[in-house]
Amino acid sequence: MGFRKGLIIELASIVALVLGIVGSIHFSSFTAQKLNTHLEISTDWLGFVAFLTTFIAIVLGVFLLAKVLDKAIKAIALGLLNRIAGMIFGILKYALVVSFLLYFLNQLNAQFLFLDEGWNSSSYLYDPIMKISNLFSSALDKVNIPDPIELIDNGSNAR
Picture 1: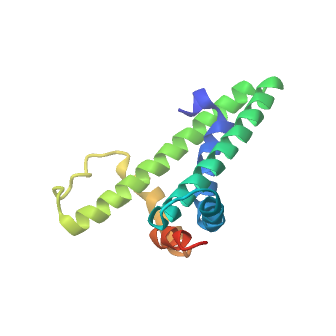
Picture 2: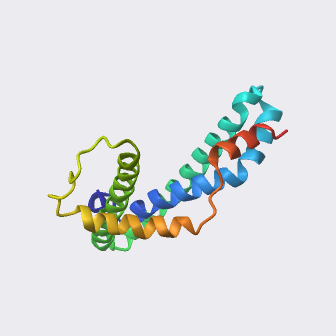
Picture 3: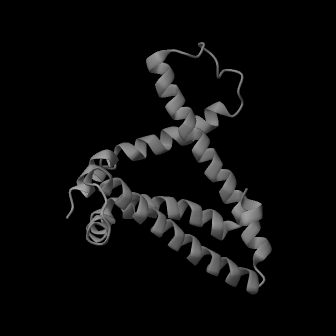
């Protein structure tokens, strides 16, 4: 978890994911144009390949930068502080992931009723984790997020 990786790498994992998705949404049409001029890729796959290529390039770039920064932190003897902060951030990151999974589980259960009523009543962590989920779901409702499938399809039309 975070103690082993440190804060820099933990932060980089979140930043890489977010920048990878956002960057791929905005720059995959550019990548599709470049791929289309240099490679013979079917237009059916061009949008997906461009999105994936852009995503991987951004994620690798962020992780390479994070590794350099992590080495610098270790060189100036802040390694232990980095590891402790990374542990705290890692715990928060996993709590966020679990809260999203529980949120989607609740949404699916409300629609398909595959879990018994009261399945979560004996859990000590369910309510605190759902508070995190509710906080972020209300924040996401205010953000206009485009449909990723539509964006990938639009990238395949780039020439």
